[in-house]
Image (cartoon, helix red, strand yellow):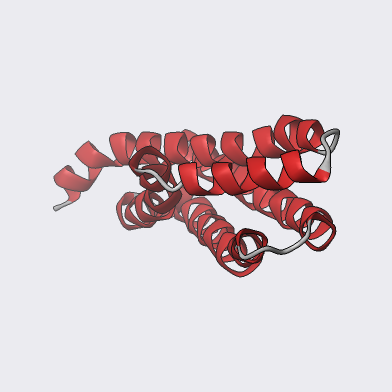
Length: 151
């Protein structure tokens, strides 16, 4: 069994790190470019754009990394040796935190906006939740990269 773990450890940590990086990049892009750009638009354009984006993002490519990042981090925990396991566990916790923040923060706001909610009730709160998930996903990336380095 030890030989199998040694064989899969590197590829699993690489895949987990890449998935975490893709998630961190997604949220960072929203924080650094998309939302500042949309902030400069009128209310109708903002609301319409967000509603279209929120529908479009639920696609297989996004969902693969959104759910794949914590799943691969969990596999990394199972395959990583004791010297790096703590970092993999931290990466898993942060990847799960990213999903939780999205589920309790961003998605309910998206749903409220789609149901006719106002930009005023949406924008500031959504941006704050996105900053939190940018930090958790970036933390997951750093922890998993460090686990890979330490393995």
